[in-house]
Length: 518
Image (cartoon, rainbow, N blue to C red):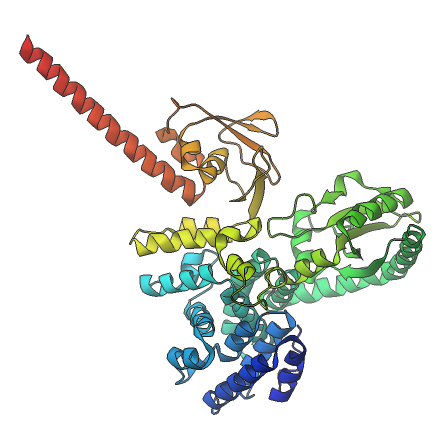
C-alpha cells in the first residue's frame, strides 16, 4: 500500500474493513480505534498530524494484506503500551490474550536498537527482553508482519525527521526490514521499503537511475505492447485463459544489478518484464512451450522456480526470449495463487481468518508445520530454548542462521532442508539428525562424490554416507558454518574426549592392576 495521503478517518478504515470481517469483529475494531484515539489524543507526529493517523494507516495496511482481525487490532493498538498509559492487562481484558501478545511482541521489536545487519545488534541486549522478543516472534510470525506495516508508514513520513535520523532509519530499513520482508516472501513490501530507503541513503544515484530507467523504458514500451498483443492472441489459439501485465524493475534492484555487470545497463535484460498469470500450474508449462515456439529462448536464462522455489517460497517460471524484431524480453509465468504469494508472502499463505479453534489454524501456528522456507522460525525457537537454559548465544548464530540468504537442498527421498547460503555438507548432515552428522563418512551431491569443504548449492540432492566407526574429528570445526551443526559437533567432541579420558583411565587402572599381580 502506498501512502500518498497520511490521514485516515475512523469511518474510512471501517469501510475498508467491513467486507472482510464479521459484524462482531467490526465492533471490536471500532472499540480499538476509540481506545487508541483517546490514548493518543494529545500526541502529534513530527509532521504535525495527529498521532492516531499512524496506527490507523498501519491497521489499514494490514486489512489490505488480508490479515486476521487480531492483527488489525494489534496494528491499531501497537503504540499504546509504549507511548500511553494503556496497559497490556487492559488490552487483554478488552480484546483477548492473542491481541495483547501481538502488541507486546511489536512493542519489544520497537524497543530494539537497530542499525546493523546482525540481529544481535538489532535486538534488545538484556536477556529478559531478548527472550520475550524471540518467543513472540517465534510463536507468532504476525509480530513481524505488523512491524513491517508499521515500518512502511514510518518510512513514508521520513521527510519530517532530521537528516541523521533519516539515514539511521533508512539504513536500518534496508539492512533489516527489507531482508525481513523478503524472508517472509513479501515481495511488494520489500520493494517499497528498499525504494524509500535507497532514496534517502543515496539521493543523487536514486535520481540518476530513475531518469535512466525512464529513458530506457520509453524506448521499449511500445514494442513491448506489440509483443503483449501478439502473445495474448497466440494464447487464445490454445484456449489458455491468462492475464498479461508488465513489471518494471525497481530502482534499487537496478542499482544492485548494475553492480554485477560493471555498470553496463545493456547487460540487463529484465528492466521490464511481461508477467503471464494463469489458473493452473500445468498451464504455466504450456505457456512456456508456446513462448518458446513463438520466439527464440535464451537457454541460460530459463529458470524453473515452480519445481524448485526460491528460498523465500517464491514460485514462477522465468524465460528470456529474442522476439522477431530482435527485442529481448523476459517473461514470468505463474498461477494466481503463486502471484498472490509473490506479492504478499506469508500474509497470503497463512489463513489467519480461519476459526482459531480449527485444526488447520492450530497447526499453522506451530513452526513444525510451517512451509519449508519458514524453517528459520524453528531456529528462532531453538535460540529461545538456549536463552531459557541460560546458554550463551553468539552474533554468528543470529546473523547467519536468521538473516543470511537461504538455500534449499534435498535428501535422496525428496525431503527439503533449509540452510544458509554457503552451508557445507556437514551442516546438512547435522540438520537431518545429529547421529547422521556424527557418523558422516562421505557425501554424494547430485550423484557425485562431494568434498567436505565445498559449499552446497540451491536445489542440490545430498546423500550422507555413514559408517558406525566414523566419529567426529576436531578438524570438523572448520567444516561447519551453522550454529546448529557447530553446537552438536561441540557436544559430540566433548563426549568423545570424555570417553577417551575414561578409556585411558581404565587402561591405566588395568595396567597398574596387572603390574601389582606380577
